[in-house]
Image 1 (cartoon, rainbow, N blue to C red):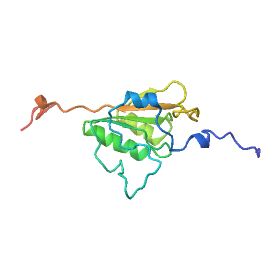
Image 2 (cartoon, rainbow, N blue to C red; image 1 turned 30 degrees about the horizontal axis):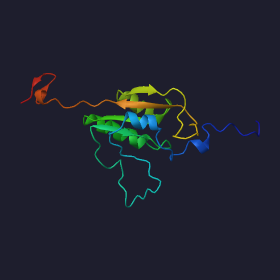
Image 3 (cartoon, rainbow, N blue to C red; image 1 turned 180 degrees about the vertical axis):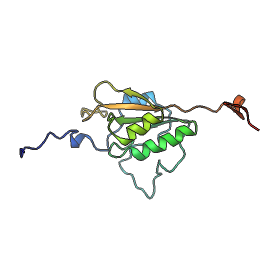
Image 4 (cartoon, rainbow, N blue to C red; image 1 turned 30 degrees about the vertical axis):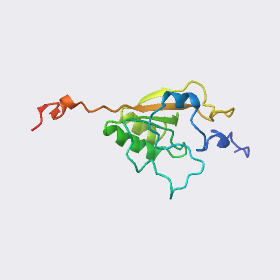
Length: 151
């Protein structure tokens, strides 16, 4: 076995949780609720925990890349309430959270090229958008099920 260090992939200095969402992606989701905004001065005592609040009908999330699983689970719960949630994630189909998204019926949109974090630094990995489409409750169908009227 060689004593050479293996290539550090993804490059550690570019794969931490403190990079903002690229501006072009922010523009697409302008006006959408963000329960996890980048906040360099985050204080768990005085700031809201996005995992503990209700999300809105249209929600965009750029969760911490180091641990997206709790955010993915929350997004799936919010989808079940009828909310549409889009998550910006690294493209890694070998993970538990990717499997959960697939099972929940997410659509995966691969991002061509690497994100730039709004500056010259390029992401150490490919990224994707995972889209969990909610369904707005239809007031006309209230009380109607697949098998007919509810009593």
